[in-house]
Length: 461
Image 1: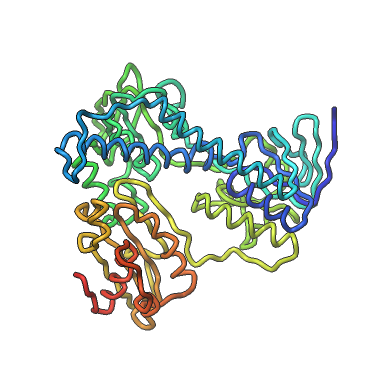
Image 2: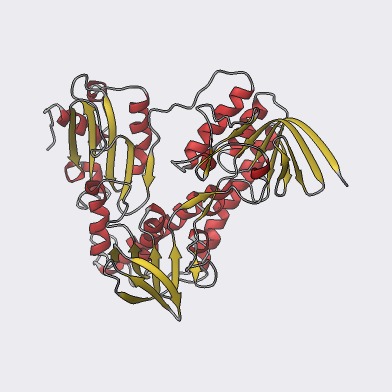
């Protein structure tokens, strides 16, 4: 039966930006409707961040058990034989986590009195859309449609050519996996599958892996790949896949083949701008992204856009922060999106975290730059992460010692991202960090030591 719904706020998309916007709007007493044609939680929860970290964790466990069976129990633990992998069960376990979180999002929206309409929205104008037989008219529209993996024309998804989504749902471990793209998605999954026992080859068009990070930060990852038998081919383009072979072309124009059972294409993501009527809404674009100001307002009054739809960085936590902000602005609060820094984490082996400016970024005036190696940190040693070349680095202004950037590479360093972001967001100085007593033994002591080293007062190195 046809139905017309009128509401204060319409949120399009149930990912980390959309559902947070919906929950916040509901909490603020705004009559809110959320439309989503997929499962609540979006790409991040259903087929991205969460499931990939589950697979990565399983791969870590498998690798540790494999070492315990082949190194005579070097930490006092040994197995009678090598562990066995049932990837189907691993995927089922991963789906259990996804289901729990998906259900949690639905419960939170219900508690906030947000009405959820299942289906794909199709806009006829900036404030009106249809979802099946339902028409929704809103005073305010929050566009949070997210993004999709980029598909290469000569490597279309399907069959043995998979996106990151397909790579997380493989029923069995491929003997040989080719990864096209050495960004964080390709390397996270490529490393996980190597730990599970697959032969992995990585193909990257740029001259080095993880090109968005500085080379010093990515060197430990490159060392792990080499040590663990992952072939990395840089400056090379993938040309096509047929009969179990990926054709590649080098900078010199010479072509060769890589044998592979599966090909993972991970060359980036693109904003989801097609298929829901964006072209009829009259909003201005900024290249491939929707153009917004520092309040996430589009060029159409009462239409807002957040998350991957509005540009880099295409990160879930950015989308959530923008969604919360927009809901508060609609409710009459004064807010602007102007973070000092947004943390970026790469769950490779070892992990990488970067917040703020790096050593290659241009800064007015002189800077202090110092690092502290995990080889000198007791907690890193107990995690078997002291010998991978990892470190934590602090960059600060020389004149007032204000922190500009913090980076780290090493085992479990992703858990430091909150402290790093907090320090930059609060405008901390070197002395603010060195004046805080950090618990021992923890990785956070490395941050303290790196800050000490910037002013020549390092203790444990």
